[in-house]
Length: 178
Image 1 (cartoon, rainbow, N blue to C red):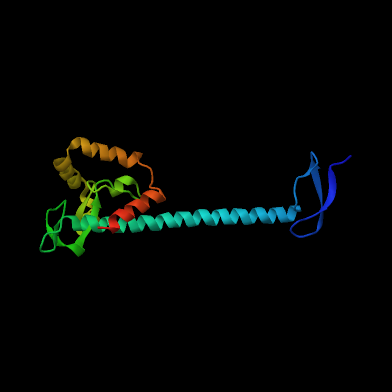
Image 2 (cartoon, rainbow, N blue to C red):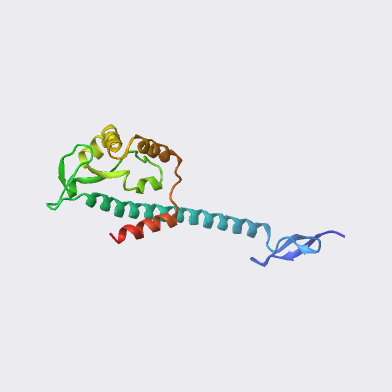
């Protein structure tokens, strides 16, 4: 006895040749409907993944915006000025960025990007136009925290994994209160 029999497709109701395996129908849909369903599933999965990625990027931007604001305001004087970490000049708050010792480049944010000891107030001239003045930044970090700490930060830049959605939400919650 053959396992191949005619059957109605559950989606389009057309007859197709299906087969049974151990007395159970293998598919309730014809080949055309199965292909359409598979394409829809792939598109939905791709869209879902893209949405999750864009959601994480949005959370990263929000977390960084809040954290950078806290860093810039951390060392503000009573007159409203902040000292640049690398050139030691005083600037108005609007002229200050949150500068990194080790830049992240085009990669996703990592936990090290949200460590207050690693990020300091830098003027826009030093941070943006002089590429962060990494040498001077590193020298000042060594003075403040020690050479071993700077080596540890350098290692962690490579080893840390990108932040998860939950970690980003924790950072946002922490710095929204400030």
